[in-house]
Image (cartoon, rainbow over all chains, first blue to last red; front, top):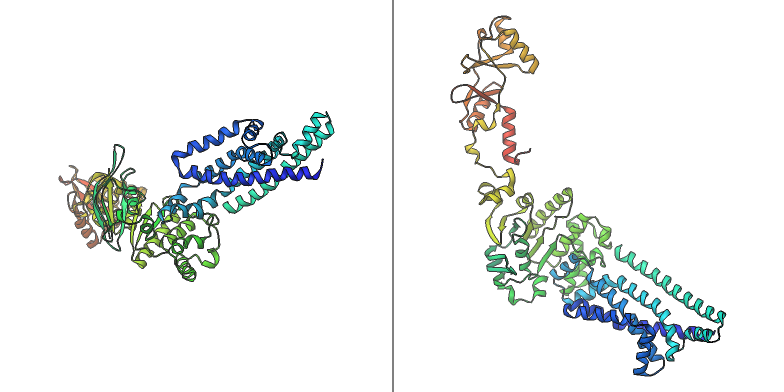
Length: 198
Length: 373
């Protein structure tokens, strides 16, 4: 096992979560603002999540060829659900009194969204990002099957050579990575919630 | 200032506002009241276009608001709601400055306004300005809610049951403050409530609604004196006199069934009764139950008698009223006599009751503050 593989794995995870947020946040906002489109957006992100990760990566590979871009596209699609859903829920669950006050005082739709609704929804959105990140750490294991590298290759190698130590070292590293991400982001989340509820 | 012309609003088949026309004058404190579903909140929210009517026109300052940009319109109309709705991600000062900031006031100007407003409700800027809404009590939060609505100095302020969720003590102190603010700022306030006490306390004009109509629009006094319907009367409870004070008779205020004895009862027995009941006089009646007079402990003492029928003691003459007599006249008699009570008689001269100074005071209290029971 080399540091290179760990970094490669991290690179895949972080880049895909970044893109996933960049796509999922606007989609969640869109679902919140546009009532007719809401069902379609939420349903589509759910359907993506039900496709087995390996199959999804395989399909993307058929379209885009093997390599890192394929892994990242697959991971992005797979991480969309928690981010889109949490963004939508975070916005939708804001106390209606706050929304009414904002509207009644003459804040435009976008002003309300950026000055009040998104800041209030952000802790919830961040929870979505955390879930997406932890999931991506695990799913990125399949990257190796579509030529993306990462820690999955160690496990794969271990399985092929029936080397328990190799499998274990890969798995433990992955678990440690997931735990660190989860705990670290949970800490940030707690801080945000404290500020929000003050 | 605010004029409704044939405004109608329907949700499906149910008519919320039914051809509503009325006017609220500049500087007036108008209170919309009525049972739930009467359309009072819908009326309020049509003024800042949170609700759009299906038909009719609403004019603010002579301009049809349907032709005004809703965002601009709302920035010129203050809005306070029951849920308070302070923005939790902003400090108290930022909350107050929301509208001025959007109207592009200078920062220093916003700060000055914020300080002035907070001083008006005795919450100093230095102490509270940088706190978050969740650090304040409910009453403090709604004070800030009101200030936020006033910050850009709008000529009109709409308030939708603003004190409905507060405890009675806080509510009443906020009511005092809102009256003070209204007097000081000379703005047009439109206030929705379902609490008649609140309406009577605050309003220059009460607008009573039912089923999307205005049943009565009057000053609190007018409404108290002449409620236009039984529903309004019931809303006001005992406050509205069932009959005007001039029609009240002695019978309404007397204490019925005073202690009375027949003339032929023994003196000793009578003093016994007085001692037991802690009273110093007795009503004496003839054999046919008609009123004969009053005997007091003093007159018994003065007569020197200890035995024999009470009728032999000289009876004193208390003032007498009849049950149908105007209450005011029997009060006058009581005040002009040196006795503690006026005897009230039925038409057939039998004893009906007595009017004491206590019953008079109670009558006045009832008339002023409603029946306490």
